[in-house]
Image 1: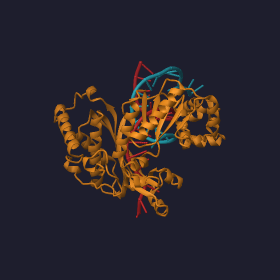
Image 2: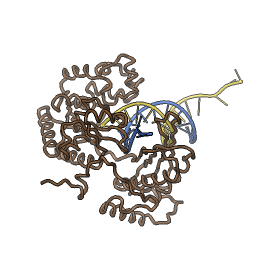
Image 3: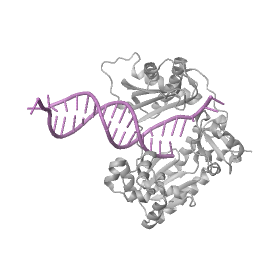
Image 4: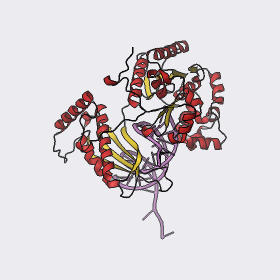
Length: 413
DNA sequence: TCTGGGGTCCTAGGACCC
DNA sequence: TCTGGGGTCCTAGGACCC
């Protein structure tokens, strides 16, 4: 059996742990630049505030209903997530950490045991962390996801283990809520009068394979109770990226260059943490996709490196060079992103016969190690490249880093 | 004025091989 | 007049997730 464990209203719930005045009231968490809503408390959901709602369009509604708004505090959410994961992993069943607030567990035991386990996990996380979980139990991952959604309105737990319950629930479950069915698939299905998970599970395999590819077929099989999507534990990362939408449009190369260098420093640091080296970097640049006056323009450029590396100066050099190749004078850019992909283990490094570093590999490694160490000990912007030196102020509505910074610990009297 | 960020997987089509 | 058949690998772009 699979368990899907999902944290209820995760970001909002985390904020409520540390600030009791935010409990039992509408609360929304905003994306970067306070652009749009990325999380809502139960009360905010009840006000029909949709996921992704642009802040500026909803400001008035928030005022009228006294909705509290906060900027995102990812450091805090990641740390709480890490704690919850470690509590669940103590039970020693195979797990897959699916997202910051979701996790699959595979348990080869009988149902009474599994129900006991699920209860224990729920109460422990509630007591030790203060977060409420919804748990779905079923023979496949897709059904477990479905069960966890049903659990939200069923005291936090739901099992789809018996065939009878399963068919009843499939008939009630809208097709668009099925895991893996997005807007494109939904459109095709509804055109064929397929509205529920049950309708979908009854379609012929040939038709599904043809219209919705192998992915659609897997979903259909899983809905029928046949495992087609396996547990994926501890998969190494294939790519890492960083991207930002700017509050204002940028139309100077030097300003973009500065941003890109800052991205490079951060991303190279994450790369060394995994630890991996990258063989391919991709820089992409786009204009405002909502602009009515200027047509949307996006350009993405890969740059294959001579040798896999995680040495910040080399990465900066190549990234800036790539940026130069796609930057067009006269455009106003709204978003910049940097991706490192084709990641290789540093020990499995293939060196280039023709390439000759000015600084020996061993010195590069030692230098980066020292840099990371200093930044870890004294704060992430203690040492940076002169080219990227610039203080960024954190958003006014952001909560404290209660669990990751000594100077922001909560004190109790 | 103002509209997020970080990922994975799959497919079609081109380039290339003998 | 008439131009094969069977593969692999890579990449861009789409779809999807939270």
